Length: 236
Image 1 (cartoon, rainbow, N blue to C red):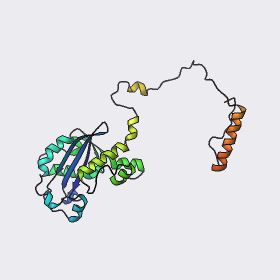
Image 2 (image 1 turned 60 degrees about the vertical axis):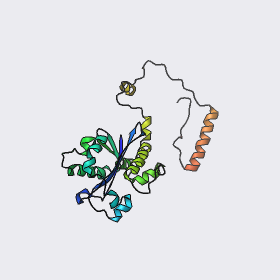
Image 3 (image 1 turned 135 degrees about the horizontal axis):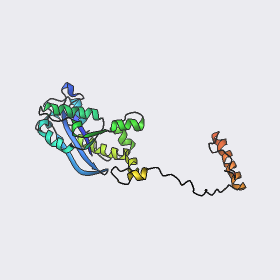
Image 4 (image 1 turned 180 degrees about the vertical axis):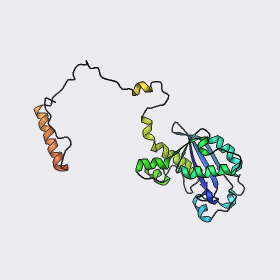
């Protein structure tokens, strides 16, 4: 699994905007492995100060960096066959596919290289509306794990990795591992023997019945109703 983020010169590749930074971190068994991919890219265009203020990469800094065409093969090799985790994947994948096409070398599109999980869509399913990475980082208490003075691609990829781990933590308890030869048996329906002996019923005593009624009366007085109201008898 590869967690990915990009920084760009703007918001729309159709308007000529380009990628200026790619950051990727590898997750295996829900843990960061320390294997990363990080590169700055010369976009061959001038960036407005408004954009520079977001990611902190100046025009001068990027002048001597490699072009996307020069890093494309290594980048593809790093993500090939992986599950990419991206926040707002439509944005990043759109830029990646645009850059692949601009090399004019017949490079594949992102979805031909790997699968993509969009945590923006996951947050919409979880919270009822899509949430920003900043919101998710605060919600899951991981916002201080990385220094985000600027929204660098590698920095945001690391933060998204921590968010993804917390966002999917409940999946770690499901024990539904694919490929387990015992999975089908463990999930199959097991029917109870029709000839089994009856279950022993222990009826509430008179004192227990009275204690139950008293407790229900207290709950109904405070809440106005009780979902547990009912007779506890020796016949049940």
